[in-house]
Image 1: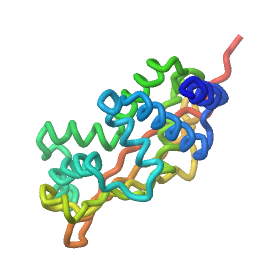
Image 2: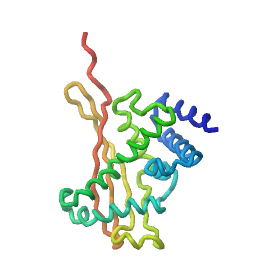
Image 3: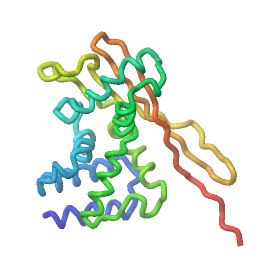
Length: 211
């Protein structure tokens, strides 16, 4: 069974992950392998992102841990204070979540350990392309505070991420780049909100080789 799952995931990656349906299939397969091999402790962030892609809301322990980090930063974004006003430790933790760096590292590790191709196999921007598709799958699926278990979270009631694609590509020096924005919105228990954005891009056309 495990070998069958790995081979099916390999087929998807080799053929190219280009649709949201493929992303969901990939995340479901990865979660099956993590559960089958009892590898939750090795891939906590990857498991969380698998769950995020497969649920309509996130309010379990892993989501609460992330909400605690957003909670520390909420007033800065609500009052439009500078990112640099946040403590360095909060900046780092927020960066890890909002740019999904922990997700990227654990996915790379997982693919390597299970003998699967990396997403950068055919495109140097393979991860950034995948992240856009993944973001489309999970956009507007909230991290929510469970009323019975959210006592440690003082301000936040929910966090959502929404994906915005640029209307046009940007062409510079023979390159054509596609930009997208991940917009994170933090809503507090009084119904007020603040937000911040992460911008990514990947090359859709590179200059032709000369000679």
